[in-house]
Every structure is written in structure tokens, then in C-alpha cells.
Amino acid sequence: MSDAALETRALSMSFGALRVANAIDFRLEPGARHALIGPNGAGKTTFVNLVTGALHPSGGRILMGGADVTGLAQAERVKRGLVRTFQITTLFRGLTVLENVTLAVAERIGVAGGIVRPAGRRRAVIEEAYALLDRLGIADDALRLVKELAYGRQRMVEIAVALGLKPKVLLLDEPAAGVPSGESGTIIDLIEGLPADISILIIEHDMDLVFRLARRITVLVQGAVLVEGAPAEIASDPRVRQVYLGEREHA
Amino acid sequence: MSATEATPTAAARVVDAFARRHRLAWGELVPWAVAVAAYFLFPDYLALGSQVLATILFGLSLDLILGYAGIVTLGHAALFGAGAYTAGLLAAHGWGEPLSGLVIAAAVAGLVGLVSGAIVLRTQGLTLLMVTLVVASMLYEAANKAAAITGGADGLSGMNVLPVLGFSFDLYGQTAYWYCLSVLFLCWVIARGIVHSPFGRSLTGIRENERRMHAIGSPVYWRRLTIYSIAAAMAGASGALIAQTTGFVGLDSLDPINRSGAILIMLILGGVGRLYGAFIGVPLYMILQDRFAAIDPVYWYFYIGLVLVLVVVFAPGGAFGLADRLLRRVRRSA
Image 1 (cartoon, each protein chain N blue to C red):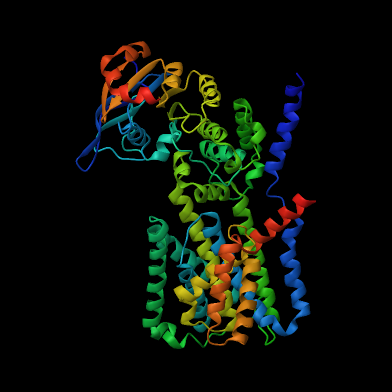
Image 2 (image 1 turned 120 degrees about the vertical axis):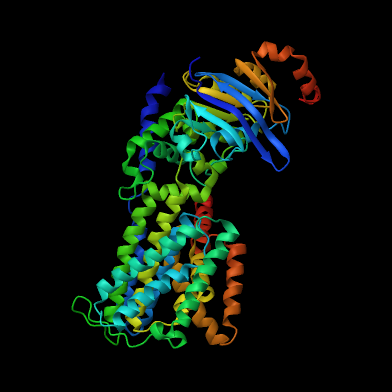
């Protein structure tokens, strides 16, 4: 078996007596479109925080392309191409859209610590950031402040910032959360249009989005993997139906 | 497809506008013109003018860490005092050459910033505020106890400051004025360069959203420590200027509440995170202080506090914030 883009082995985490991650074995194949679903409090966001290094696991290992990254700091994992977006928009609200993406591009290229030359002289960085906005169809807002944008637009900037880091593995934490249902289609189109070589894990509540985008689904319940399979298998699995019965009725 | 034809020009326009933000605006020369004009207009107030200029430098250094990196501190006096005492001790022990004294004082303060910053910058928010206060208080008490070296509560006297580049410090404060103005200008050039550099922009990112900076792979702690040390050196230079031009260093230069607190108020009055807040806030504070003390010599600080409350409630962003809003209103009605 070839190396997974991202893999966890027996990944565990406890807050006191509460086991929020219980020996999670998970593989994200190269180029995957994989969804992680589960009811509220299943430990999905904890899983993302563990994988990205925002939280430290109490047990288990995390590997990227076969290399152990369990002990690496968050910034180091980003440098290796492990990038996330946030469930609640986490952007530089007082800065322009272009600046948001430029900061990410500059960090990736490694010029963000430069102190002598003005940032404006590094035109290639700005041009790359602008081209990215253009590709995502949000270049019109390049010079507007993030906080002035509608929430749906902010969600797109959230993804743009992540793409500015040229991710190999992209973790999308509820990319359409809080977006009016009429606009979530734009987000789905955007995600569908992402380069095929990026391995994507989507953490999502919205089942329409999951079944449209994912080719593989993992169901997380109470910090442990309940079942993993193709969308059709998951949809017909009686255990999943039982877990989601309450949720799907008011969804 | 006219849209695709128009795109490159639109793109170039946006990128141009964005890439030009570091270019000098004419307005940025106003403070320097005012400072030079003040020299000729108020020849009797040059000693006070030197104090204002040196204090502006202190405020500028605070703006770098507070306004850009979002580090809230009550310990800035520690760095000011470290510079003041270094310059004072050098001049009192036979090293009277001011320029080298200034550089050494800045270096010592920078080192104090580096070492204390390495510890305090591991904390955030209210904890950070408290530990910076602790650092300043410790230095204050250390200087108080070490009376044999610092003169303790009596202050350090016996400084003998030699002429700077052949100009001796005169009674009218002419040399002091030009000396302070030159150092302030040099530090402003450096600070402005930093603010517009990629490093400076990343500091703004840290201020706006630290979590996101971590998530884009930024070494947040090291960036903060770097700017903290640079600002410390500038604060030290400011302290050294005041020590050298007044020939005296008192314990008040390390006073965490009066020194750190006052400069914070001055910066808030002017506007935080704009590089020029101190240029307005410091003179404004000093004028207010002078006027209020004339009205009420005992409780003038109460009125300063009142003005601060009014500014925070009705004019967040200080004088610059107010000017911004007025300009926007004028443009909208035009």
C-alpha cells in the first residue's frame, strides 16, 4: 500500500475523563475527496486540531506522506503542505482581501520575515495573490476590507487564504457553515474546481454538500470511527441512519 | 470576450495600488516641517521641545509593539529607564561622548527587551499586561535599592555630557533640540521601513488574528520577540536622549505606572497603530497637562483621565480616528 497523504494511527486525546478522540485510525489517500461526518460533539473539530497541531494528542501518531509529524509544531506542518480552514471564519478582518492572501503567500515563499525591502517591492507575491483571487472569482473585492464583505464571500476568502499556502492536504472545517443556502452552491462549485492533486478532507454537517463532493466518507461518533465507506454504503448503513435520524429530520 | 481583455489592466491597477502603499505621502512630512518651524518660532521653549521630541520617540516605539503587533504592555518604562540609566551611568563615569553613549544605551535596552520579552511574550492578554508591569516594577525597585550605583531615590547626578559632533549642549537647548530631532527622524525612518516591510505586515496579521497567523505557518513568537527587542532599543534611545539632554536620571524614568501609563495615554490620544499617533498625542498630552495643572494644580490628573474616557467612548482611534471620520463625512456629503 502506498503512503497516504495523511494518516493517523490510534490517535487519542482526553480532556480529563472525557475521551474526545479514541484510537482513531484514518487514511486520506492522495487526491482524495473525503468527508468526515458525525453528530454534534463527535470530535470532528478536535480531530482537525490534533492533526494540524493546535492540540497535542495524548497518544497515537500522525503521518504525512509516510513521515511522522506528530512532534512537529503547527507552523512546520503548514510548511509541509498541511493546511486548514476554520469552521468560524478566522481572517484578518481589518485588512483587505488581497492583504489576507498576500500574507499567506509571503509566509509560504518564506519572505514574510523580511525587514529591509518594502513589501510592495515584492510584486510577484502580490500578483500571485491577486491571480488566486481572480481564479476564485473574488478579485472584485481585492481592495475591500474583509469585515465589509458578506459572510458567504468571507467563506471564500477563507479558502483563498488556504490556497495561497499551496496545500498538499487541505482540511475544510465546515466550509459552508453559516452561509445562506442560496449561496452555498458557489462554495461547492469552488471546492469542486480545486486542483485534483490536493487531497481534501471536508468536515461537514450539510449532507447535500457531503454527498455531492465526497467520494469517501468516514463517520465519527463519540470520538471513534463508526464506519468508513463510499457514499452509497454510508447512506444505506443502518447504524449511520440511527445516529443521524434526529439530525436529518430538522436538517 | 471584453471582460477577459479588461482583466489584465484591472489586475495591474489593483496590484499597483496595493504595491504602492509604502510610498511617502506629502502629509508625512508635516511633522518634520512643524518641528523645524517650532525651532525658529519658539526659541525660548527648546528645552521643553527636546523633551517632547524624545517622548515622541518613546511613543513611536510603543506604537510598534502595541499598534502593530498588538502587544499590550505596562512595562515600557523598564526599557526607557534601562536606556536612561545606561546613558547616565556612562556619562557619570567618564564616558561623556553622547553618540556612542546613545548607541550603547539603545543596545542595552534592546538586550533587556530581548531577555524579558523571551519570557513575557509567552503569555497573552491580561497576563501579559501583568507580567510586563512586574518586569518594570522589579527594575524600578532594583534601581531604588542599588543606591550606591544609581543614586536611588535622589537620582543619578554628576553626568558630564561632552559636545555632540562638536556642538556643546547649551543653556537654550539648541543643540539638544537638533540632537533629539535627528535621532527621532532616524528612528522614524527605521520604524516606517519596518512597518511597510513584509515583516511589519505580518505583525499586523498577528494583531488582527493570531490563530490565523499560526494556521498560515507564521513563527508568531519569534516575530513578536523581534519587534519587542527593536522597540526596546528605540525606547532605550529615547531614555538616553532625555538623560543626556537634561543631565539627570531619576527613578521616575522607570516608574511603571507614571511612565508606562502616561505614554500609553499619549498614544491613545493620538491614535494607535498609525505610526504618527505619538506625534500628535505627546504634544497634546503635554499641553493638556500644562493647562489642567494651571487650573487645578492638585487634581489635574483627574481631568487627564476624564479626557481619556471621553476619547475612548466618543473618539476611538484618538485624534487620527476622529480626523478619519470627519474626512469620510466630508467626502460623503461632497
